[in-house]
Image 1: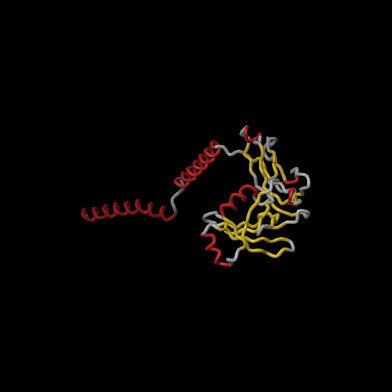
Image 2: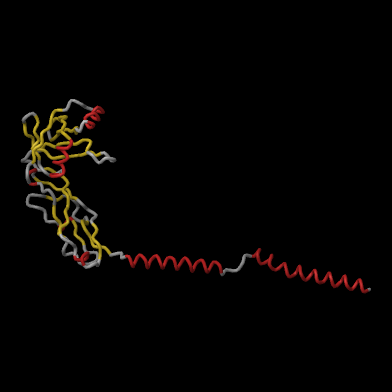
Length: 243
């Protein structure tokens, strides 16, 4: 892996006062490591962003401080949740002869046959794995070839990975990296919506055809009886007049 060089300066501004540094385009940072006392440093934000974009957290960097080079890895970058700009970072100083653990991103290579033939879609639930290696052996990423995935439910797990020589993967081998799932087509979505609408309409029609409630029956049945009583009264009055 190529070695990038980055120059930092000692930092005297600490605590909440570092907000002033950020406003000036300067990123506060710390250097730490095994049996190493933490050192507060600072670096121009734009220089850090450029290097971080190239090497991520697995690329070894030669950090220069007061003319001395320190082999480090970028660790624990904190970002502003609104601007997505780095707020702080740590530089982990390593011993080139001792193995270190870090997360390495997984890169999908190729296109699954199931996708090209529109049989299914490819999901990637896992995007990185934890590895252990000597600092100079750490890979920038691990490639995952997906061309051979042709059927529904076919998958690739961590156990299927072929790690570079000298690299040990510590993530659970049973974890799924990618998997082919059923394709939900536009036609299928429209059909499901049509079936739901038909079911709702049938339910509404059933409700309209149900018998009236008991109170309604009583009220409706009372009217003919009332009409009959009026007719009887008129007939009785007529007979009395004739008498």
